[in-house]
Image (cartoon, rainbow, N blue to C red; front, side, top):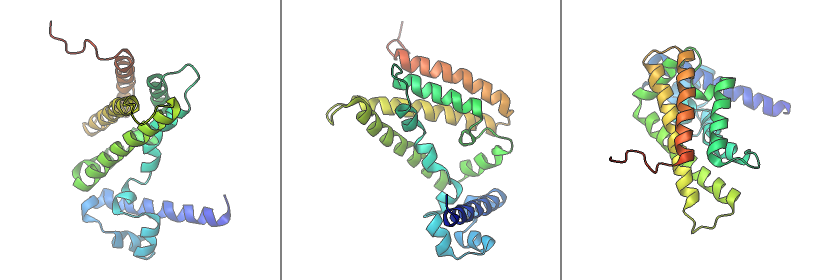
Length: 209
């Protein structure tokens, strides 16, 4: 990375850090972009050059989150299914304490701000929908399926729903005050069950006796 890119990255980090501090202190909806710009002594236009929307200031790693599942599928081993690849990737994130899982100390305040903001909740739903869309296209490319084949869309919907449910469970437990390490272990067990169900299918799930 050249000096110019390093300076741009440092500016981006400074803006995001300042914005997060204000959001945690006062809530997302009560902070303006102008106040963030004033905090870092930049113009509002400069802030928007780095972050096109106010939601981008809070969710500054959203593209990384959207690309998680597609990247796991592209990196799968020769004999590995999409479900197995997604399972392995999630467990690896737990092992390395991936920041976007939201399990590090002090994260409760972050999730509480997100829970209390309709705008952020809407953006999180958009991120989930975009993940499903990108994943479906990735599966189509990886399997060579044509546009008439519904399986890439179906598989993407199932995998995205499972992944979203796991992340929602993390947020729920964190907001209820559970210790991050106990949440991590509970989610690890949930990962195993979730992807086992996906791998085996839902043929008999909720079947009336």
